[in-house]
Image 1 (cartoon, rainbow, N blue to C red):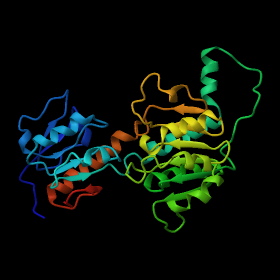
Image 2: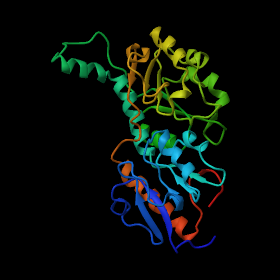
Image 3: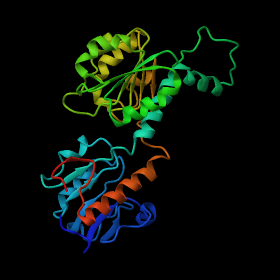
Image 4: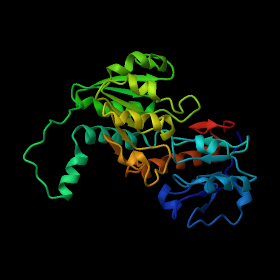
Amino acid sequence: MADRADGVKAWLPWEDSEAFLGGVPAGFDVELFAGGERPKSLDEVEFYVPSYMGGGDVFDVVKEMPSLKVVQLQTAGFEHVQSRLADGVTLCNARGVHDASTAELAVGLILATFRNLPRAVRDQERQLWPGSYDEVDDSLADRTVLILGYGAIGEALERRLTGFECDVIRVARRARDGVHPISALPELLPRADVVVLLTPATPETTRMVDATFLKRMKDGALLVNVARGVVVDTDALLAELGTGRIQAALDVTDPEPLPAGHPLWSAPNVLINPHRGGASTAFAPRVARLVRAQLERYASGEPLINVVAGPPR
């Protein structure tokens, strides 16, 4: 591919992009995505990095970029962007950037639920020190965790689970060494004390966790969703939670944001975290390294990584 070092205009979302990236690669004119301002020459932008978790208006602007060649996301999910791009635009996601943060949160949600930390927070607010509780807390030790959607984040999660003395069942769309196919779920779900969802949102996974799926989970099992809200049938989950048979810990919901008054807020046995899986101090340095590497690759004509749609570049 041709060297693009003669100058490429990129539109980046940070107030001080050069400091954030540790210097902008040679050959790039960089304008900022600051305070909603647009580049003066929007029609010249070739490389666009939307703001993290931006709304639909952020992505609608691509229609005004006739020179656009690359959109580099800061999220691993890309289903909310793909349909907005022209056929000739290459879409890259942030695979690898959120592995640590999401895996940490999944472990945190499991431990918070098993060790009844929400109850401890409520007791602290009331300045209450109970002499004892009627039941003992659950432990992650000696439990079985099923990871559904076993990929890079699943691997990161398993590494963190290793020290907790639990067993891990790996499930992905297709079977591979040490990983079960998704078709094996009916026999695997009754074995799992914890089911962690890490699947992308696709037509195949939308509401995959339905009433049948939930009923196959063992009594007392915990469902952890750090994937996408639409992977779970919310009505089916509410019905199962209402029986008290299973628990849930949700970083994502359907609908999202979860509106005030929605029955999930007051459902029993559920812990809700408002989509904070990737929001940690690990995010900024990792996304900066990715964007800088992609800019360097694009400027020098090397193939981009993390291409999920559009032509390779």
